[in-house]
Length: 501
Image (tube, rainbow, N blue to C red; front, side, top):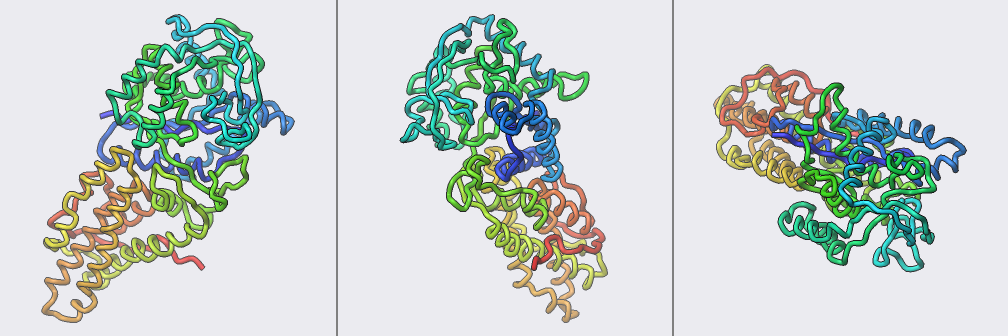
């Protein structure tokens, strides 16, 4: 089974912020989970380096666009290992290999008769690099994303016949109700299509920072078409000497923020149809991370949080856990350092970390560091029955937060089990040796199974724990709670999530 998943590519007009980390971590969780299940996975991320926003930002700093792109792309690339992202490739759209493949695809669109020359006039947001239709414009003639006043633009461009794909898109949406997820965003995209599609600008004449239009070198392609094609172009050269297109296309999931929904759910499938290419299986649209002011985190609004700061204080796994736990993936939600601290203390340190430490310490103390190789508690095993399958079903639908909640319910159940069985009391009674063996075996098996399920969310911490309990394998077959537990040697385990002052 192949599984191809992508983040949007990130604009290089400024440095990365927590919103970029959020999307990357979510995609990494899904990619890691599918690898656990034995899928052939390809995970793509990268940077969007062309267009007016980048050119304007470079001009403001007195540098060339390429210099700004190189500097900030390096920041995004350095973010990936800090996030424990397991991406298979990092694409930069200023790469000549990407440019050539963009030109090849769009020449096919041109040859198929879906391009013509015309004059475009409309309200334009330079930060979005997008012309806004009337029902998108806020009061005061402002951009709905950046809240800046729009400018009236008129220029002669090459146009893409988007209107030609009105009926094919309607058919796509009728036949594939899960093409856009969650459902509310499906409805939003469908409403945009139902309002009637108009042809859109494919090129810009007054810019030179972009991919040159091969049939008209005085123009560059409109940045969104260049950027959208990264999902396809990367497969042609991500691995030297190998074309991965047939192996992975179409993409299983494009994961995007809701501010770019129109481009990915309307323009993108229409462009692929125009080039005679299959459309992706799913586009999953997540919400905004909101700052303390209740507005979307945005570089232009100045309300961003630095993911590096969170990592420095609490660690990468804590950041990954927090972002998947605190805001339901797919919805908007406020985030901040106070809530990071609360989740860290209450759940990572007190619940999972404490459970791991107690389990390891009791096995080492009461059974000389070897988990008893006896049958586990059938009542506890029953509470884990079907958990791995249910988690897989949720993650198949990209419901990462809901899956984490199911897992965390069992973390709390194991903590209650410790209190119910009170191993420290059983250890004082020689007649309770069998009960103590069953309790410790059940705890070791529960911690092991849950750590396998949690591995995509917190890869470093769970790997340390699994190594300490002598069960380092993270394959998904190990996510089931086994009837026979124990037997492995248990080593020392420093606190996974030390208490912070």
